[in-house]
Length: 278
Image (cartoon, rainbow, N blue to C red; front, side):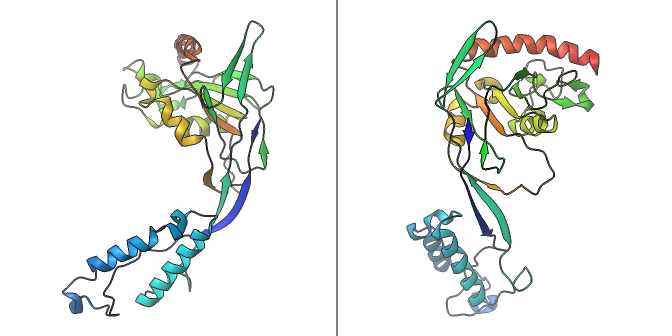
């Protein structure tokens, strides 16, 4: 089960950066030696905004409001004209998503049952701003690299029904394994995890799990563990027409090594079938 705890806020995005200027109130570059920037003033601004009292300027904290108020006062003192009508700020709806994945994930088939441990073997998260998203007894479909690329005559989803199901795909694109495909060892956008989630959502999948391997991903699983297991901020896309999968995530290669190798063999034959179909 994959839960979310949501908090909502409007983040004020400033229309420009804080300009360090002469503290005597002069805005004429000629009065400051031909430059509007003063080193000591700039350092002072940076120290203020990076101080602990601003709490990292993170949205949903008192530091967010403190930062916005500080910058608006600074812009006003400089005599800058607002860039958004009469305002220096623009409202941006955000959500704060806290994933609460189970301690273990079980994958079962008629022949075997595998158990994976949260964070050690897999990481789950979502960008879909619903109160709760679940993955319970959901059917799994292996979809090769999860790529639909007409310009390369490639479609991993051809003949597959993945609507409402969890798709399992491999990281990177076919060119990593065969330099004559796609752009060879230069990864295309089709190899990135963001594309794989987007395509899975377009295909109607409920979730997308990527089999992680260090070489094709170009980074170890530790990066995934430390980057995606905690609270994150996202744009509030509830009014967006773009489809979203409930639960994107990545599967670790260590305990899943046998499955990853088997997936590679299956991908090779799947790739041959796809190229004939397209």
